[in-house]
Image 1 (tube, rainbow, N blue to C red):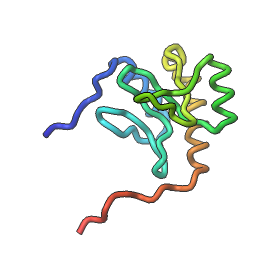
Image 2 (tube, rainbow, N blue to C red):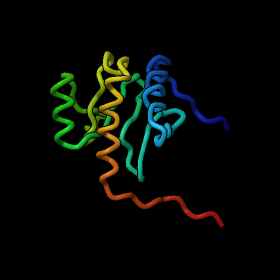
Image 3 (cartoon, one colour):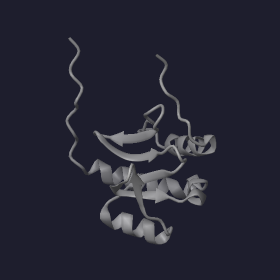
Length: 122
């Protein structure tokens, strides 16, 4: 069975991949639902509507949402704790957005790694 592919706006996927590619230590994961993670903690994702969200510390979240008139990410009716929506015009400005992406990465790097759920191969 073939893996599902991202079905959202192609431009959003291109911009998200361009953003992630600026960081050598970060890999884009997820075929149908692109995201990035570090030590088991997701810190960015692209949803099917073409919206990118970044996860921040409380202080950075407040600064980001105030600066860009943004708000929380709501997925499947639930507010994603710590995630802020990236406005479309900022997504197109990958130079500026890269600084915020780095802040998100730096915050996630401070969190205790999550244990893996994968079972070891026999």
